Amino acid sequence: MRELVDTPIRVTEVQPGMVETEFSIVRFRGDKSAADKVYEGLDPLTPEDIAEEIVWAASRPPHVNIAELFVLPTNQASATLNYRRPKE
Image (cartoon, rainbow, N blue to C red; front, side):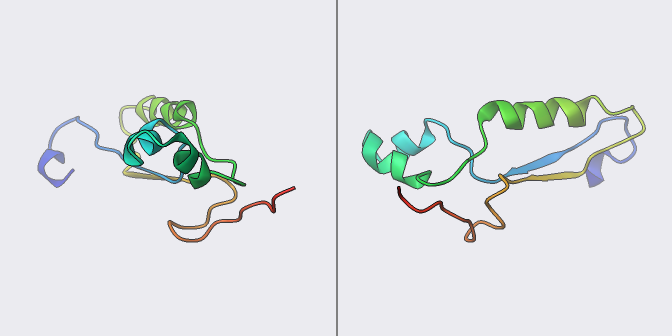
């Protein structure tokens, strides 16, 4: 952003919280059971949620720049603090 301050180019940093994607399956080398446990008891964001925020930030008026966008699911407060529903 500092390098582009004298241009009309806008820079937005999107910092998503837990987003359920196929990355967890890749991370656990194809072990879907292990990947599913990452989000067990949570209501994570979806890729569509993040895409919607990106479109929103990009559609602001030309003189407005959303520098940082921190997007979390409601049951996540930080990278290490979240609420998991008890198992039924």
